[in-house]
Length: 359
Ligand SMILES: *[C@@H]1O[C@H](CO)[C@@H](O)[C@H](O)[C@H]1NC(C)=O
Ligand SMILES: *[C@@H]1O[C@H](CO)[C@@H](O)[C@H](O)[C@H]1NC(C)=O
Image 1 (cartoon, helix red, strand yellow):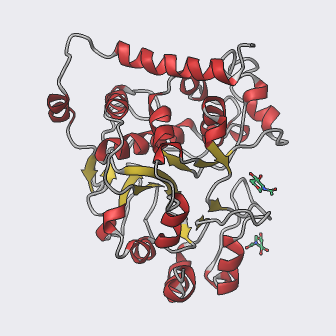
Image 2 (cartoon, helix red, strand yellow; image 1 turned 120 degrees about the vertical axis):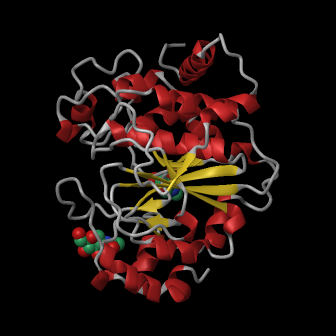
């Protein structure tokens, strides 16, 4: 067995997780209730100056580590009906909140919303019902940067700690919209006959052999990723995923690969750490436990400066929704889609009941 076999890597990942727990301050073996008090709430309000942001960027991680430790310690599953955690990563207004509200309507007991809003962003729209008071302590984020990984891990940790019933964690942005009803999403995530939820798959794209990968692999320096991430284990996939709880726990407790991926990029234009960390980690740790595709449609045709096609109001139609739902090989359905410009809100609301959420 070579050192890069999945089994060895899985063991190493768990070893690093165990290491994290062992390194936790030994002097204060706090009982869980006490720790709860000390650590405070994980959802901090409406994001107006309430950030946790001591030491910006991915640098100062002490407060993150306390949260991550909590998230891996109270990682148990709940006997209650499973919920879906919607994790919004944003640096501008949540323009589509009214559409999400329509999507959530009648399912309040099956959903939780969490928002990581870049502290520098001035959000002008007041949070709507499901988003109110659901902002987590946030730190600055930058496009195509490891700060996006850090923010996603922060959202996962907050959602893990906040509600043991959160069974799936969907990472979304302010430009994402739902393209099926919540009922349909829930039925797809939790097949009715599935008695045990602990082996449900994560929906994350995992690709190898893409043309840009060689340059992205060396973006931090020739051997910077070694020995933890040999090139043949390096993966790429869309930033937006829907993770099962056990994988959210794994991500939040993971240190070995994160130490590699958080290294500064010498060449920012060919780095995109947020598209590599999660697929690489999960493909190493549990290759059979991931679906290898994402539930979030994106259209890279005619992409400009690394941005996907952004739909405008004139493009919104029932036909578009039908196209967005279909995967290329027709074996699965997309549940969410991006990227939509703010002017799409009206046209999308107009077809919400008749088209978007008609199932
Ligand atoms: C369809 O695509 C998905 C994602 O790329 C892949 O996992 C699946 O095996 C494909 N199915 C077929 C029948 O080709
Ligand atoms: C993808 O974007 C291109 C424009 O860049 C557009 O012509 C095409 O219709 C889009 N595809 C879908 C499925 O919306």
